[in-house]
Length: 166
Image (tube, rainbow, N blue to C red; front, side, top):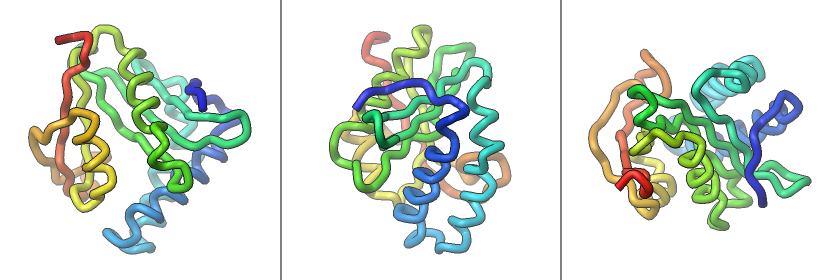
């Protein structure tokens, strides 16, 4: 598995990965209809396309040459001092193989002025919470609008320092 930057030609495969992963992860939490609605809005081709050239961002894929197994998207915040991780998803068939950690490490390296990584995670998503805690993250707060303003989705805010910044 190698990590590379996403391009226009990847968007349909990325969308498929996100739709499948979201249903696998969140159907039991939010219900299939709500997940389908979120997928339609957040993971549309136009929403994904907008990330490709977004300033101060990185849109990365874990790829083995045949299959895109994971996706990560982050932006710089706080004048570049914080990496805001918006998405880190690994297809269920590829979870537990170190792909999430690989994507996370690569993202950190893309923001050389940052000293911490911040993310929002649904606390009922225990696989993700265990992953982030295992990666050295700690809960620092909560939000009532995970993902975007007005979403109404509650989530925990987690942070960890970037190791070279310590």
